[in-house]
Amino acid sequence: MTQIIAGTRTEFAIDPAILDLLPVQGSVELQHDSAGKVHHFHTHPVDEILMILSGRLNFVWDGGQRIVSAGDTIFLPAGTRHQSEALEGGAVYVIATQPPAKSISN
Image (cartoon, rainbow, N blue to C red; front, side):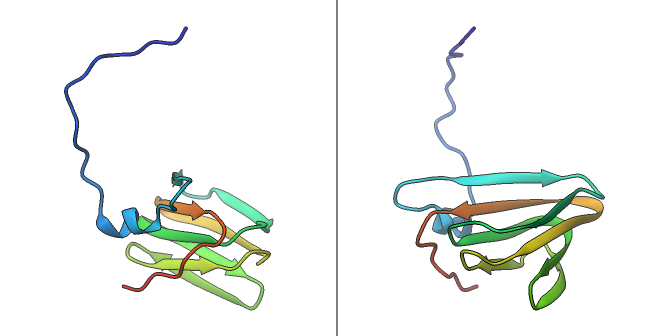
């Protein structure tokens, strides 16, 4: 059953860098992977931006591999074959997908 719970909270603190990922129309996803979670090789038909908020991932793509951690941002052009594995302690990251995704700088 659908419920609406009345509340008084009208503000939510969000890092401005995450707001920069938000497309004009669309959304961002907050992902939590427990240690050992593997997203096996796959592709997306749209550009994808991942911003690592906490933890570490072993990130592999056609042509490279790197352990990424909090503060790192990954820009994946559409069609890039990639996979990831959450390392000890897991990882939390933001994913933005909306064509065309924009490259961001720190």
